[in-house]
Image: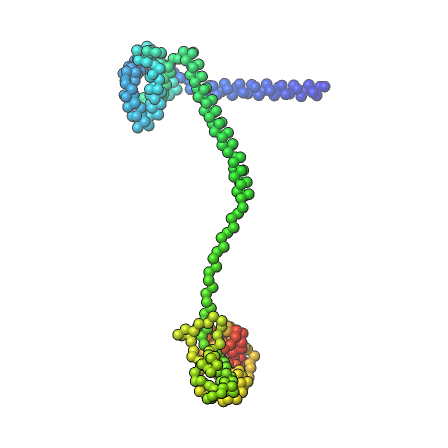
Length: 375
């Protein structure tokens, strides 16, 4: 029990100490304030007289247009005190009525200058004007107009302000409720959009396929043409009843026309068309198997070396720049290959000696074919 009582006593003592320190701090703060000296009576009288004369000649007896001109001048000079004060006075003119008299003025000393309270009488009510004057610069530091309203007028103003405030809040709440009510249409619109069948995309009209490029006639086509012409001529020689069974030119007795074999859709042009060869004399019993034999493969010059030089693409051999036994360095041109209407240099991959040339000029080669070898 004694321990509990001691704890309570310490708590009370701490609270009392804290209260005492707070009081001392407040007293210290109050003592640091600068004491305001009383106003000199002569200065007080002069200020009161000048203030009454100023408000009567420059404010109360001026027309509304003059007051508006003073407000505009204060705005140009960035005099916020005068601008706000005169604006409030102009707004109260209808409730003040016509000016009657300036009744009294009382000047007091403030920390930064003087404060003058001027009581005046208007047709409908009293008006109190408080002017603040800076002691050093003489500038206006305060201009407050306070009309004297009756209790009923103040209550009416309060009620009006309350109605306006509540009306504003009510309108804002209605607007917010209306906005919230629109949210349901967002869900409906989204549901309809998701439920609506998606329109099938229009099938794009396929572009007509470009006709395949007409291949150029090659020597192999001409050879095949000659073989077919010889076979047909031999057949005509065996079956014709008159003459030698052969008509000069590509047209034969049975109405057939000999043309080079081409890919489907080929249309000869001025550049690519090749006239069928005219067979002037064909033995009646020509051996078609011998005539149709494929051309012999190109001979390989030299023996194969250890380093192969392969074709990077299909094409045709245009030129052979090196011979078997020639010494070459890396990058030297060995052959020239025509591919895609371009001449391509086939070079030595390393230094060495040409061991073999595996192709001849005019040979058609495939990609990866061995063109030459090196040692």
